[in-house]
Image (cartoon, rainbow, N blue to C red; front, side, top):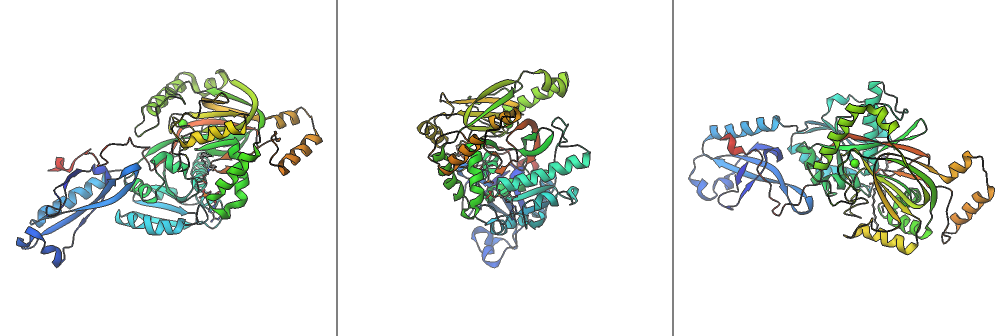
Length: 507
Ligand SMILES: CCCCCCCCCCCCC/C=C/[C@@H](O)[C@H](COP(=O)(O)O)NC(=O)CCCCC
Ligand SMILES: Nc1ncnc2c1ncn2[C@@H]1O[C@H](COP(=O)(O)OP(=O)(O)O)[C@@H](O)[C@H]1O
Ligand SMILES: [Ca+2]
């Protein structure tokens, strides 16, 4: 759509894709407005206002508007009618179920929603059912009861943990309605097609940041309003034949698991808790022995160390998904999982991280794996072996600058479609070796953070929630859920929008 700002004020033209129009309204002209400029000569001017997405720097979106005036009332009404019919034809949501976590982040979820998001939903004529959660898992449990077909999408206001709750509720509901047993690691899970929107109000908000490019409530609300759709890989996590969790951001053992475990007791600190626990965990410098086995993701066309970051309309995601589908058609799931070789690595690790996305966030704008892809059916498995505190610090600092965080002798990264992990402790226990001294020694280390040694086992950090077992089996499910997002857009020089389907074509 080609729009000229009000002729009296600004001669600038700008182009807005009709898919990024938020609303169209007839404009009531007050006396003052009538007396502006050349419209004074008009007996009775008529006007309509178009509200649209204006793109600012760093992927920030804002709602802007422009008013069109004309003397012909019928022409004005024709425009309004034509634009409204156009908006009706797009996949914009009309009815949303919203869960607000009043407890996450800086505990501002409710005010963020009411002050920044609700007015935009109202402008876009979106009706909402809002639930302010009263306890953990309230949203997840509620999703097993609601009439989900009534909604065009579900919105979570909170951090990654809140998204995880909503995702588990929707996926769990879908499997229950389809008679699928999630405890079976090889179950043919049924895809969840209802889109999830994230309004960032948490502590890390890496899922929002990695799929939109910024952690900003208004930007996310506008992505929901325009009806974006971004598929997302999901990892299922099992312990033997028991379902544990799904993960879309970070599955972290060692460093990030220890940070999460320590920070859970300090939620009263808000997001700062991660900085405090991060420093404490860094100083403790614990490493963990164990065995990782994994299947490389041979269907993907990218690699963790290429410079091809995942961007809107990602070619690597599209091509990888096509090749994966082709593999299943030719060989089927059973062959694919049983026949392909598993690579095995034993060692001592400071951190074992598996990420389905870059995990970019305000703390680390390029994330744990900058070239990880949102929808390529793979995860990047990052192994950080035991090293000195100084070297580990150099590794961490590289997450905050443009240097390659994988360019260290003690860091290996693999693009995988499945992996398993067992800690040495559980391996020893299985060989019936019980060593009281080791347990007592482990306690000594916990009491003396200065000690640099290996503790029996760490905790898995699964999107900010802890897992009950250290021995896990993980499988990546390609494009398993959908978000109201479009991935991170290439930074265009001029943030002005571009014309996709212009209103001019309606003329
Ligand atoms: C000396 C400077 C070192 C700086 C290192 C910075 C490294 C930051 C890496 C960030 C990784 C983020 C992975 C995201 C995980 C989230 O899903 C999870 C839960 O998010 P939320 O519910 O919104 O809080 N966040 C965490 O597990 C926190 C990880 C610790 C971040 C320091
Ligand atoms: N009303 C509530 N009271 C307590 N915990 C809640 C509530 N609603 C959600 N939770 C839980 O809070 C945890 C953290 O939520 P999240 O929004 O990720 O905040 P943060 O980013 O600060 O971790 C999640 O595990 C979620 O299940
Ligand atoms: Ca992926």
